[in-house]
Amino acid sequence: MKKMNARETLLYLAELLTAYLEELRSAAKDGFAYGEKTAYTECLEIVQLWDEAAVNGLDYKIEKRYPL
Image (cartoon, rainbow, N blue to C red; front, side):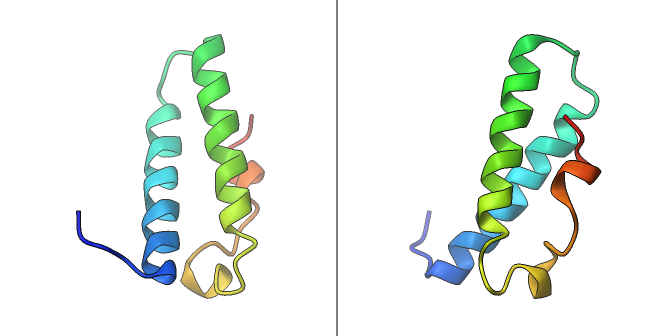
């Protein structure tokens, strides 16, 4: 994987976490999946603290889109 600057890294991380959360929508409702979803949601909320988050597609309530 090539080196990325901070902006590229945050965009990549947000894309990856969102993809994981989308996959978990159809996953079995077990304790492990719930833990995964909680962790990914929390990480995405941290990325949302980035001052450019909203203009880069993270302009929504994460827990509303991916309820726990």
